[in-house]
Length: 446
Image (cartoon, rainbow, N blue to C red; front, side):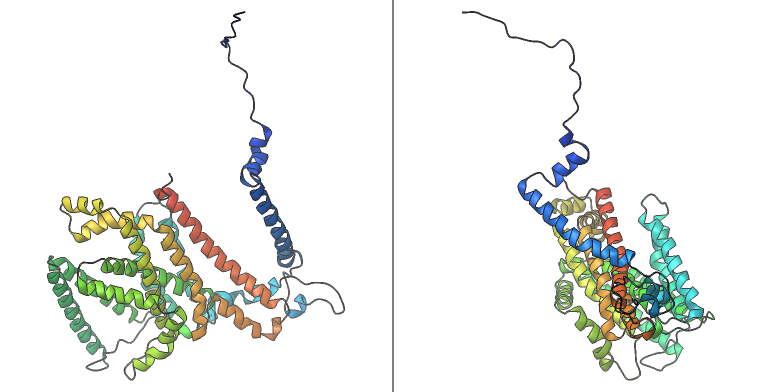
């Protein structure tokens, strides 16, 4: 029996061999993501067929056969006795673009809307960029200065502050406001005492909040020489952004407050929070808008009226706050009990524990849910049309009554334009949410 030695030891490194062509580059990506199995191959082919059915006609309508210039409907009509299929009438969108943005806002005053858009942009862009410094000043500007300045610019200011109880004079209004402040401070004192906590911080917070509101009321009552523009003539993208931004800004802090209230150990606060959340979640937004527009004025004292847009803003903000509260509550429940115990072991009080330890972690966990609520709120602004407020979509629909641009493709073009605008805003919010998730490492990849 032979004993041949088959042992082999390589003394030199072998030459590098490139990976198979089917595993790298475009072919590798296609094989890995689209044709990795027979089921994926079948789904890919179905997807390609659907894209082939839908995309070319849309491109043909939106770009190839589209009409880009013209003075009236004649430009967007096919010649008589011809088989030409006309595309989108973008000349109509160009002609109506000012109305789609400003509604019926007076032409001479539209610079105020543009200025508000500019002030909003210079505050929002640096706030969304993590590397830009002065975040605290930026937030104070966006939450404090900009809303007041924007409100005065858009409305013209010079509001008449009249009392409700004693008389209709301005002096009576401030006396009633002072009484209300004292009552709220007393309620805060009672709640703090019931919770066996130091009432001083809560009372000071209430007094500071009422002082800020008083300063805002004083500013909006000052006559800055601007022409008053009623909200009835607002419309288009202006109304959409006003409702969406107000709802977003108001719903987040309200949602956090009600989420904390629902988990509170104080029965009264917990009960009030539960009733609020369940009530608003159980009522459709359309009903809320009808109630705020039609029913609410019936319950107000004679002579007391609120602006229709303001009523819609309050309804939308409270409606979104209820959903936001449940989103935040989900994040609070995901925080381990050890985090609470650790904060308490450090001697932190309730508010410091929530503000420094619990809420930062909870809010990071529910970023997708928060942004999802924001996107839903932004799209729900179109419902205000049913109470006579013309947002972007309502303004587009109202333009269909103009015979100057009445063509078979007018409505298709208008809806396509509105969809594009909404998609840009919603997609931007979605992408920024993904960016923040990656930056804060909230994906919890395992």
